[in-house]
Length: 172
Length: 212
Image (cartoon, each protein chain N blue to C red):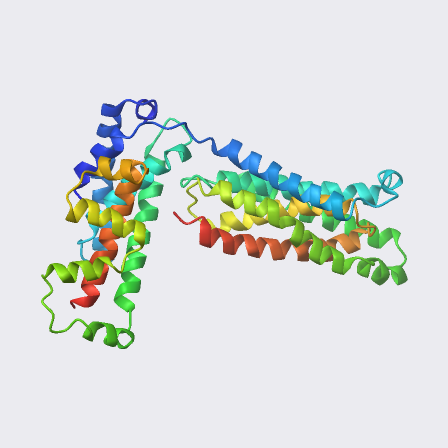
């Protein structure tokens, strides 16, 4: 961790890979205990890695990194489970109107994708269109929007998740 | 996105200037306090007999109390910004202002005749105390919450509440230079009530803005 913070890219990559593996294990056993499927585990792993990257200055520099990593992973796992819990508890009556709306449309048309994308905020929409539809690189998109690459990745990640959620509610 | 791609991208990010949480929080608290103090000096200013008052024990005790609230709550808020924080003994330090106040109230009850108790408790500035302390807490609380967004607290609402207590400590310290009610009976009745308002505001702000 210390080498990684000092700018050793290879060390940082190895560390993140190792953390990814351990978080995946933690998330898997936590999800199994809570009896929720493990579809979102990779999401939790990625969110934890992102949080570790974005909050790396909250590590106290002590002899052990594990307690800090575990605290962040726990936070993200609980977060994910809470979101799932909320999603599972949503009463269907409130959504009947929305659920019925897209009926009869072919869900695989490009028009449908664009309609979904229009539900995003302007910045997210721009990023998704540029990377996922026009196939531009993250670096180019980041440069064009004068954002950092990680910020673009975070925004893309969130936008895709929002899209997936919108997709699920439109196609039960 | 594949996790491996994310890792590659994160590792390739240029390393920015490291964030020093402690310095940020201290600077924001100082900045917020300076704004509150400047507004206070422009609009109200300290009481006119402050030099004479500074020689009385009741007056000085107010500042010991407010600083005893400010110091542990600010340190604890800073510590809780780390996700793996163990608050430990510092939480115990939070009872210091209450112990101090409680002791002072007991002494005041002993040295003051009973028919003066209610007069001293009500004082003449209760409404001032209840409005000015929360108002003057706004700049330090806002600055603190803003700076604390760089942190990763496991308990955002609790961390925000402590920031509120620290902000109230700043505001109460400034306000105490103006308030002419020095009796511990007054301080113990109204200052904690004003502080509670700010603590609740801090908890709400923490829940909203310190999530990560």
